[in-house]
Image: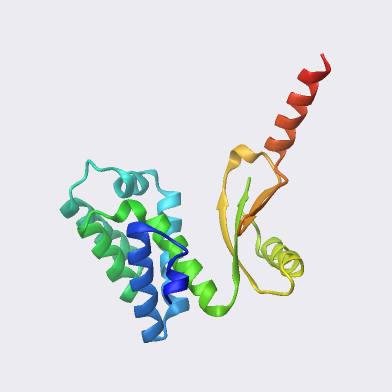
Length: 187
């Protein structure tokens, strides 16, 4: 466990580590991960919720009350809801994305998987994610791959994939930047 805990750092490490241990003991690793992912999706979809989570202007009472209402409406309960409420009451909700990333990394390490951080211009479909996992599994020597996806429309198209210290950038944004530099050198 100590080796896996070094994957994330600081406050997020403590929350992710404690959350993983509790979820593992309860046999709810996948359910907790699904609830955390759903809450992150709510943050990504709502500018107001994102502002509530990240802004230091809101008191812990305001954050706790608002988050409790969001969790109830989204029907997120149990271990995931408890840790989100604790993070809100301790004014640590701003690191939720890092807690989720750390939790996913700990789950992947526990399962013997490697985590690939994938950024795309648009959300990947299930079939695209499955094809990418299969391709990355082939490249990683047969090790199972867990995807941690995010969307960045500025990429225009393509993907940026990070596995460990390796990064593969096939985004149109990078290709256009490279072309721009090459054209400047030609002049």
